[in-house]
Amino acid sequence: MKRTARYIVFYAALFGLWALLAELKIWPPYLFPTPWGVGQALYAGFQDHSYLIAIRVSMQRVLIGYTISVILGMILGLGVASNKFLEDTMGGLLVSLQSLPSICWWPLALLWFGLSQNAILFVVIMGSLLSVTLAMEDGRKQMPRIFSQAGRNLGAKGFKLFWYVLLPASLPFIVSGLKQGWAFAWRSLITAEMLYLSLGLGQVLMMGRDLNDMSAVIAVMILIISIGYVVDGVVFKGMERYLQNKWGLTPAT
Amino acid sequence: MSANVQKLPTQFPPHFPAHTGTPSRKEGPVSVGRAGRGVATVVSKVGLSEICLSYRTQTGERLLALDHINLQVHAGEFVCIVGPSGCGKSTLLHLIAGLQQQTHGRIMIDGKPVQGPGTDRILIFQEHGLFPWLTVGQNVEFGMKMKGVPAAERKEKTRYYLRLVHLAKFENSYIHQLSGGMRQRVAIARALATEPDVLLMDEPFAALDAQTRDLLHDELERIWSETGRTIIFVTHNVREAIRLGDRVVLLTFRPGRVKSEFPVELPRPRQLEDPTVARAAGEILDELREEINRSLEAEYNEGVKPRIEPGVEGEA
Image (cartoon, rainbow over all chains, first blue to last red; front, side, top):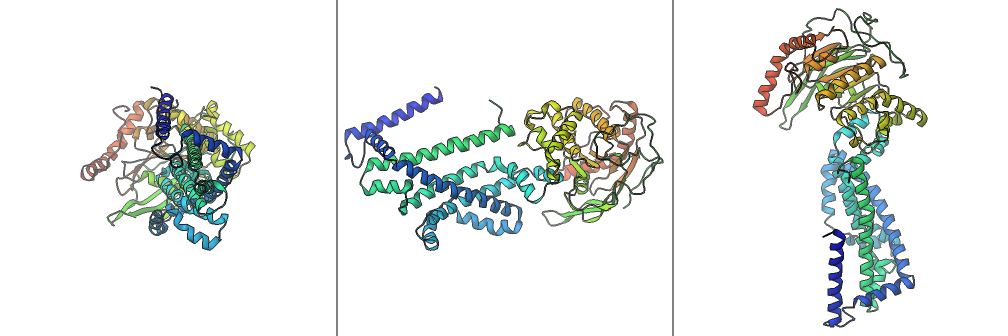
């Protein structure tokens, strides 16, 4: 069976099961909506532009937050990887900090930044910074030594060595970490948005709850999943494939 | 401590004028009776004096890797360094390249001490060390880009050096699309493009098949005679050393010391399978046997794999 065919069968079955359970009315519709009800909610949400605005606001936030944590994470990770002292001290701290759910930074962010966009950004950054840092550290260590030796040999040093050699050389090793960082950033953003009325998808989701509109809640959940899926499948898969082709890591198909 | 210099070279190896910076300088093919012999410069191109390197092993003991190495290499000379694996010959190249720091002694280039890496000495690695994220052309360009050479000039020189290694058609290919021999040629072009005075080659052809290696020997000899670079070539293959070198320097097994030096005065171009090459190789191998045995012993005792190709029974 072809892959697309398998997908179609799987999702059709899932959809059918959902429709069947909803139509059997085992649970009241306001707790377990039908697929059509959710479809209507989606349509209405796009019709009055509220979803579009929410998506734009959320994407903007996550992009800003993620970009900052990628830049910071790369510098931090490289520092930790290339300095024995930092590796011994900060390395352990970073790993232990990763066990902290990013939303735990929320109270602190509120006190520091007040109820503002910056508080949300802070949570997003704290959510993804650690995985980017750890990925970069790991990537730098996995990177064959010969690249940095060859780079220094050819006269690259300091920032040039980082930008033209260390960064591109470690990309294949950090791309999965970057992907994970993105997933953390996205999750942290939605969580933070749910706690603070500030446009964005998280808030639209909470609005559905406040209005007791289960169809809208599920519609927004589907939106959040879809965006996460698209970014992962298009942006990161594309990046991985591009790198693999360039490096010749997989036979060209 | 000091090297047991076997037959002191009565004649200095061919001396090339200092590198002028333009890649267009041509010299006749290297062959018998080449002119320009006999002039010894006061300051040698590469001067190693009393080089020692020791490091701490994981068990905490101090291990001496290189022991008072003295070596003078003249401008335009092709010197081959031979020794069993574990003699520190690759490490020696890393020291000259400035990628590592010796614990004792001085390395001089044109009479000036080496301080870190510099583009006057380019190292060619056994595993080529090309950047897979760049095209062939961008790889060759890399050193010039780091130096700040303007783009137009870079392009031109990249083309020139790619033609020199017969890879002009592959400028836009990626490294993984090339064969092992082609990759090593790109590495040579990349090294030459920064216009170094000294090429340091760390077993560059060890991973290649015999035919490709023969071809690259010819090419390297041609490039050497066309560009007049000084080459220090590390190999574990004695015949390869004699095929290419003006002089063969033998290192002992751990700690690496200069055991003896052999001037090679066979006419060029030489062939690996020449009886004269084989005879000279046999002579060096006799010297080397003891070191090979020591490295073999070390293999049995501690699992260090010796790599030495006698090159007498034919190529692997």
